[in-house]
Length: 316
Ligand SMILES: [Zn+2]
Image (tube, rainbow, N blue to C red):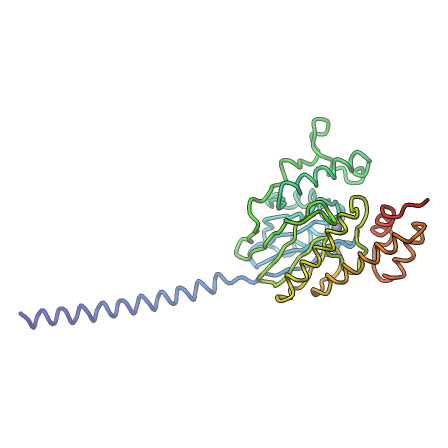
């Protein structure tokens, strides 16, 4: 009897040991398989707009895509849409970083080409900025060139439905379908725009500054960017420099080429020189010439610099 009990116990122990080791092995295999399927390679590509040299960024991971900012005209947005379609990935979100038309005008075209993609902003203020900028543009006749962007109203029931189509995100992260996370930040003092979103991607070690940075393109220091905004802007660039000193991300600006964190210094210096030039210049023409002499290769002098000088130089 004892022998029988011993044999049963022996076989029971042997069986369970075998079963446990088998389970561990399968679990390990599953874990490594999960790691393989979960691993996504986030990629970013730039579509360079001609008008205002503004950038549109496309994030993809082999499963889906998110586009950030959509150019200054419907005509250019059509090219952007074709380019996105060529990737053959579902576009899930159209993220608008701030309420300036060079970043959102293309959204009507994008919405029509990708009706399933959500137009999203990081907070209510940005949604309000977009709608009020368009309302103002319509009032001064600027939307005659972009009639689809005229706000929907009782008088214009076919206008763009800013209230219904722009969704405010309730999270500070935006995750791609299939993996990959974008970290959104909006807690900034008014600078280039009243409210602005930046995007950081740990996977890419990349920081998308939106219009806190321009590279090789004259900055917008026009209507609305007064001395308080300028001071906030410079202070924020100092903060960015400290924050990213160790991780050294690639800096993707709102306008112009990607750069290193050196760009924070470049932009700061530009602002300081602009202040100096506009404080001393007696005429707008003189200020234009001085800035173009300092930045001979920077683009958009006839648009961005012109408006900036016009706002900051008072001719007596
Ligand atoms: Zn811009």
